[in-house]
Image 1 (cartoon, helix red, strand yellow):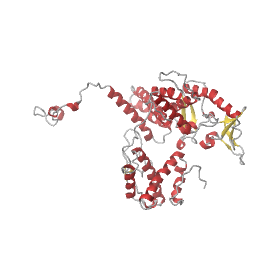
Image 2: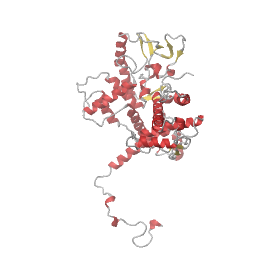
Image 3: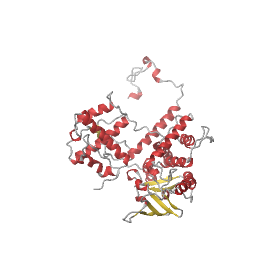
Image 4: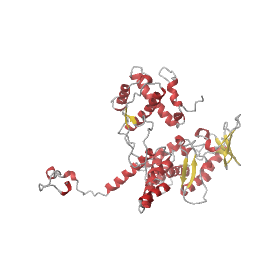
Length: 474
């Protein structure tokens, strides 16, 4: 059996390889998971197994009991000498370890799960969702030690005005007045700004957007409004292939980047001979034909299609143009090759640091925050339009309208690539919180606080001041 590149494995403190244990990482759901998810799963399991070995007298994963898990929970969360992790961190850890033991029970490796379970909370009414197990526990259960102090429902996001200011000051080097300063010497400004604009307007993950090829992004100006393209499952998290909608304003900036910065990067790299030194590149035979890709130097003369090429192979994906080879990747570094995700993370961190230095400490942004911002802003727009359109309709017409145009929350779910609408609900919570903040802002500071009323002036609702039963109590 061929083991996929990047599959994690665990060794015991004696450097022993446990075959049944590591078979867990080879099951279908885990082998196809994103690499960062697989690594998080391995790290969480390693922490628990290390605790068993070093703190529970050399116990192994087959020997774990409920007492061991509770001791681990006490050490991770409460012990003054322990790490005392946040609820969100613990929630992720216990979920991942629980998934392992559920698998181990099904395979017969252990008799029972050492993590105690409790009944799952019911799904809120009105969402049209049938409750099923989601991997946290058996159907209808979750780990009893699951944290309740995590910030799962708190969503970081930026209003459009705040985002534009962060982009202009942090990425473009403008002053706080919104104008160029003349002192900023950063390069690839248009590339970085276009990348951030595309992310906040489409909600793509940083790994998905960074893996896009030039042939996949629409740059034509045949019509205004939104233009969509297909995000292949090979580069989407959990193979969540979907349509991506790009507005006309962003397309114009993307086209400008391709014509200027990207073209200059390719020319410099080609002149330096960087592309001719590539070992066994995958070559797209024509820029206009993304469905014919061959591997140079391979004995098997196999041909591929662009949508079947994953993120790792895209690093050596080239296009055969009239001027010679050039990368198929859309986003290129100054050295002429595909920009790494870590490089984009550094650019975002530098932009936020630049905002702090400019006296704007509240303007902090990372790539996933832009995905959250897309979700919250889009959901608010869709909800407002949905409510306005249905205001004058009778119930039967409203049902027909929803069937035709869909539910706003489900539309956002599809754009984000969520498998369950339960994951998208956090953005609805963000809108509810925003509405409450707006309503509270309407309460004047001089409004009397009912808590200042003396107790002897508070009436007894159980009896009437006149000694008879009040009308409202009947």
